[in-house]
Structures are given as C-alpha cells and as structure tokens.
Image (spheres, helix red, strand yellow):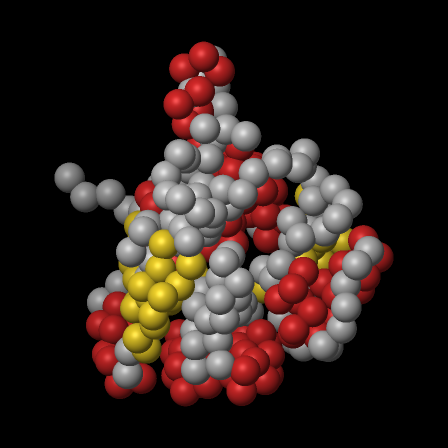
Length: 278
C-alpha cells in the first residue's frame, strides 16, 4: 500500500550534534507528518558549544542535489537555512523561480554560539534575490536588523520591520521573532494585509540550540499540508514553545530543543522530569 503525503525539501547546512540545520529540519518534518528531503549546502563541524569548522560544498554539487530532488519528487514547499555564499544563493534562487514553489526562508546568519555562518558580501544577495521569492521570511531580531540595516528594540519597531520586509524587500509575508527582545517574546507577523501577534511565556533556559531551524521547518511542514500562513505560524509557535519547555539534557553548552516536545504536553509532569525542562 502506498500513501500520498505532503513533502518538504530543506536546503541548509548540517549539524553533526543533531540539534540544528538539516538534522533539526528532518526531525521536525517527521514529527509534523510530512515527507522530508534535504539538499546540503555546507558541512559544519559544530556542537552545543560552537562551530569549529565549515566546509562549503561546490555550487555544481549543490546543483546536482537540487536537480536530483526536483526531477523526481517535486516538493510542496522548499525551506532554506544556512546558505553561505552568493553563488549558492543565486543557484538556489534560480531553482525556486523555475519550480514556482512556496518558499520558507530562515535567514541564518549567526549560530546560537555567536559564530558567523554567512559571508558579509552575501547579505545583499540574500536581501535582493532570495527575500523577494519567499512566501515567508523568519528572522530573529538580530537578523532583521542586518536585513534592514536598522536597530529594533520595541514592539512597534518589530511591526515596522515585518512590514518593511514585505513592502520594501518583496517577501509575501514576514515574521520577526521576539526571543531576543528584553520584553515578552512576542513574534510579529505581517502577512501582506494584517499584523498578527504570537505570544508565549518566556522560558528561562540556555537550551535553545536549533530553535530557528525548528520553528521555520514546522512552518514549512504546515504550509505543505495546506495551512494558511497565519495558521502555520500559530502551530509552529506552539511546537517550538513545547520543544524549548521540554528541552533535553544533552551537551555541555546551548543544548538542543526537544523535537517531540508537543507529544509530552499531555504527559503528567512526573513522567517528564528527566527531559530537563527549565
């Protein structure tokens, strides 16, 4: 018996420790019941303590991966994470344009440890060539500040930033994530028409490795299943909040989130203490 199932292709770098990048995306796709595929842009030697080395794959090999996937299994949604060079961005943009696919863009520029993951010269290409193709862009506050060359401190400035990414840079929708805010962690979505707010109680923990990857991957999965942008964001917010709350006692630094955290919400607390919620 064969089943019809939505599919998502993630285009990103790796994380051998399993908390971020391609590995986090594929875990999330599995949890959200979509078929996950991956195209690797960079092989990253990293763990919960930081990034020690990065080896970028050749543009020709990335192209071969993309052609292999798209010629056989056309995904319902494409999601990008770490794209380190302008040549990679231009190639990926060409494929997204050709296939006319819904596209979730996580503008990964800085690792949780603070390590740079993108060439400075690539930022303009990301802004000018990939953002206009995006169904939704998902920057945190520091990433939005880089995209827009501005400072963002208040909720009103987050609103303005989400609108600017859509109205000035050309994305269909943008959500500016509030995890770096000193106030409540409110995420602000502008869907091209309306502003939406997604709030959650702040969870005091350092174990947030891979949160951006996981959040955007969940969003991509829900879009693939036919959810609206606002619906997909709402589910992704619930998903990542549970993943952080039930964070895992793994690693010596910024530990990973728990990709099956939503399944633990219905489990009595006494059965989940080993998962290290903060």
